[in-house]
Length: 231
Image (tube, rainbow, N blue to C red; front, side, top):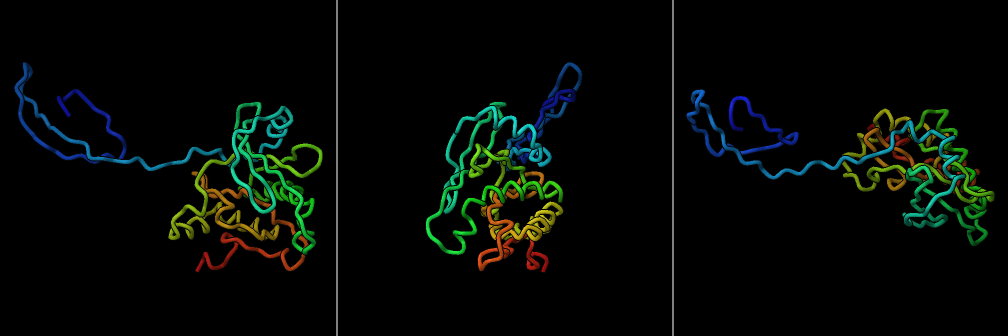
């Protein structure tokens, strides 16, 4: 830092070491000269996210999906669906999830068959009524086997340290997500089915909501809806 009238801008939370302090003669008198060395500093990673309120905009999402999209990359493939990151015609990021027909005749297969995409769309509309942090979903195509929703950028719950989960579960937005999971009987709100954004947790998989009452259905499995989070 040199001179009375000169300023330097340091990154927020910067740490530095004072190396030397001396007096220096100038035409205007003496001034103090402080020599410092900035210490290594890593800025915390703060994800850039979509505002939760933007996730509810069904009309713009529907218009963008109808206009077409370009598949950017595969995000993952689960037991019942493939998930792809897409770029919509309006330039925004989206997700297309395509359910496939399952083989077998077990109770869970019968419960899933041809209805998972419908459950996701219906559950997303229930979430809007409840003001729950769930992106609205719309159908892609005419067969009701694929859905699209806005891409949610952030950190997967499974990537968070264990000691941080309770604070997320019991946050205001976490409680809203828990009420939603309980109301729709969400059987799979695992840590890889929600994302932590700077606005709070957002649910990204509603495929096991509104299930029929079989041995697999109507069971709530969600840390947000568990009393253990409040112990």
